[in-house]
View 1: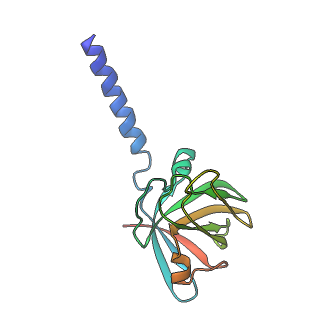
View 2: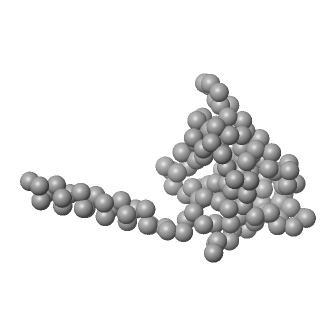
View 3: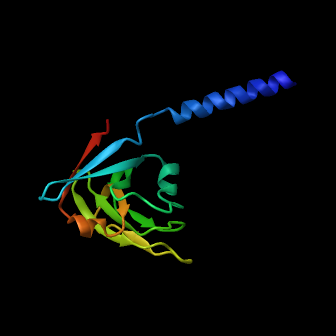
Length: 152
């Protein structure tokens, strides 16, 4: 009985390690935004599966100034985000499949139900969330282009 338990726990640990290692550098992307005055670099965590996208930046108490989360979807369509369980204000940058910013929303934490919805005005395949007001501070605007770069 004890041997079976050890085998089961070992298998569970191996599966957990493999799932964590499926893409070991997925959290090491640098998003460069060309706002016409130079490149703005954002260190982005990548949310490319449904579970990561649903959690997003929930429960984070802070986000470093040049950090964010980059959401990768399978297709381009209008996107809707909300701020449930999100503790910090965010700028939600909607990006088309051509890597051009198509919309920006300034989102505030949801203090009670129902939470506000932040919908893109145009279809987006990608979304970048950064600290609230970063787009205004750094001059990031609709029409700016982004590029993805592996960090390190």
